[in-house]
Length: 598
Image (cartoon, rainbow, N blue to C red; front, side, top):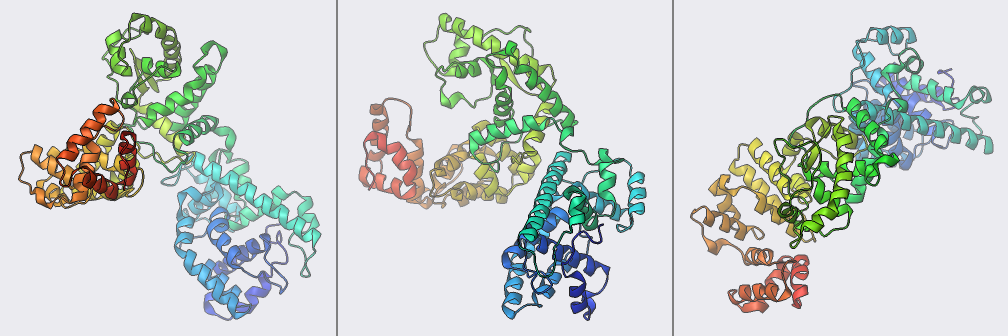
């Protein structure tokens, strides 16, 4: 069936037409031609001339979507697929050759990347690769069966998870089945002169069987049957991953926070590498139990609690502070991300912290014992939810502090990763280019950003070059946007006492960070030339030092007036310099003071 499942693709005619050239001979070229012509025909390419006519759109889809989803290409044979497209385009008019050649050249890097990307692997493509490495004849179903039997377990490719391969395989199955169904309906509605792609007999056996035959032809003979039968444990399906329900809930949390899975969450300081899938299943069981009525009103908040603690870089959170948020108490935003000390030990029963500690946690002066008593019930209810999560060994609650254990951090990172959320570990984040790390760190809690930026510098032995890269990024990432102020504000979390003085002196001329560098050098007692600092950098430093939100307007205006009095040219010159350097932040800070920008 695999030999004839797609009829009238023009394969024999095409191989006959191009067979004269040495590079067009051999089974590898024929295999590439069969896949290319078959996929183009499935996607609706015009077969009026006897062979499918490639178009720029179909060529792009073939190279970037279909081949990476359905076809295993042995090492050294990747170039044959663009070559088939070129030879096929040559069967048509000259403009077709030029158009297809342009698309092939444009997509060549992305095509190669897509074919080697572990994220695009299906079980069938992976096992075909593995079996070929083991010496299997991929055209011989009996040899494929023997080689599968000889495998010691089911290894995974580097950079891939079982859930990744399962999800990609399920998607590829759907896409191939849809393409086959559409092709059959299309040919039935408008019978092509060259004949249908799928015979009535083939379709009568079931579209699923047709798809299986194609998968075998494009990967390894008999592989699909083996992975659906005796070796199904090598290629588990969705039923083996119940925790993906929790992964979806965490993805929703991330999208609520950031709107885009590509926005990275901060790395935990430590991850214990256990069985992430097993731990994720354990968390799911606890989350499902917490959804029962007995854990109201906060049992349904378990995914949120897991996410927000991870989003804090896995630094501990306060039960009382979180309960206060749920009860709509006022919590100082400046305190929301501050880590909570974890005591060495605490009684098992939860107790709300004393009033002075509550004031410190919430940033709300004037709290008394009556307020503490009002928070007791909600905080104890929340602690009960956290204690159920803590029973998994993946979450802890010690006194008022709760968070993820290192193994729990690994489980949550795994769950985020399988749904495409950017969740680096500490080593990965430290290896990022400075611009990438700075762009991410601007949205992280300050203590977490400080840790991760320091890790990047330490990984490069705190060299002047490493510091210069980081300082350059602080001054250029998000420049001209509303996020520029938060980005340059990361300078404040750096431990500049460890910075080589030459790096700070070089930054004096930076139009954004020059005044920051000057302040750092002066605080260290180092020699520095303030004349080198540009006006824009001095204006930004003054702007960032002004109280933007806190305090009565009168005192905030007084702070501006004091700065303007010391500025050459007075307030008008200062406002103009601020607006030119960062108009977004100038409007945010000066607007409430009644100061209009030029």
